Length: 208
Length: 208
DNA sequence: GACAGCATGTAATGAGTTACATGATTAA
DNA sequence: TTAATCATGTAACTCATTACATGCTGTC
Image (cartoon, rainbow over all chains, first blue to last red; front, side):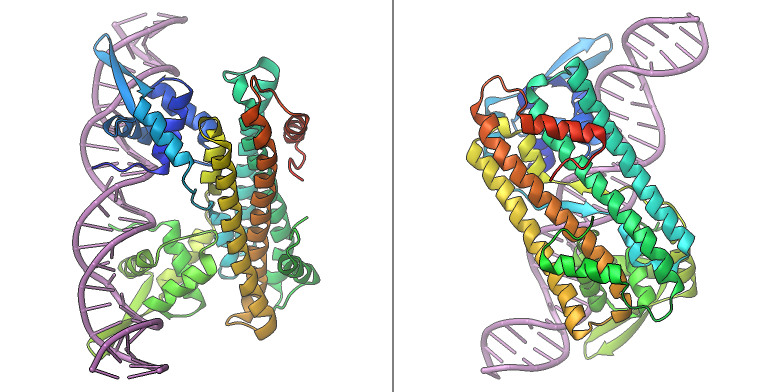
């Protein structure tokens, strides 16, 4: 028997706003959830079917020529399930930073490799931040498809932008320290790193 | 044929420091990588075998009674592979925040649910931050097992603590706004949210 | 009528998890 | 000698991905 996952509810949440075709659902999930709940397009198609098998959505198949276009609509059971999920405790945030992994093992590679890895990480985040900003700007100028949800979008984008800024700050910091720790034998802490640690322990903002 | 993943290299990086038994490897992965590369204990055991099948590590099985204890050691091929990986570009950071998902669909649930979800998220992060701090304090007072890697640990903990602080700040912000947006019809943006958006667009730090 | 791109999936595979099993070691 | 806990996995399963297939639609 199928069991719902957070991804199930992520899509159910979209269906609560309005019915979507499978294609639209995949597109909307990408546009509005990708930053903090990234899933592949193919998976959205599969998960939509699961929503039906769970009784959370109904599928209306309209034949467009030899091809069928399926439109998904949330059911009363689906609304109930969504509300129940919203009342349950969420899992803690999950973070995966490959760039940080590179830093942890930096002593096994070259300084250039490390700088390069940090740059790639920074640039990838900056690009994504820019995508988020573009979306928000669109809303502010042309209104966008769901103006009544702008406050939620603002909060989401604000968080993501702040995260991107954090990655940026941290990577610059690491790059500066990198030159020192890969050229010095015996190691120890720079005054900057020691100060960082003290701020961490004191519960203060460690960076910037 | 087996293909390496970032997780493969995460463990290989640990083996580059010194040989470990499977159990120690699992423990060390948990202690030092969990915050930004979380993997289950069972998976570490499986991945260790893969390192061997890839030729990146050798396994020495010592019989302790009826039970064998396997010790893994990095091979020259393994060191080469690790260096090659360090020279390759990393994937962008991945973020999964279920609490943010709750915020996005908050209009389908109650205000209490939302506040509760944000609290749980904040508390879970605060606890983890505290674990990181405890580790670092241990290093500062008693030295710890790898004092020569303290600068790397500092950088890692600093990042994670900053992330935890960010989640905290954002969640408080969201909680304050929550009362407003769930009680007001028609919506629109509060002056605070509008200012947030403007900072995002301007490329400034959006929060605090 | 061909070619690009929109629309809608299926198939194969794999990374990772949870739950469990079982031997060894220590403390009571 | 029981119980806890340390140590080492295996089995079963599933979430999710990548790669591919195929029909439709406008346009040159």
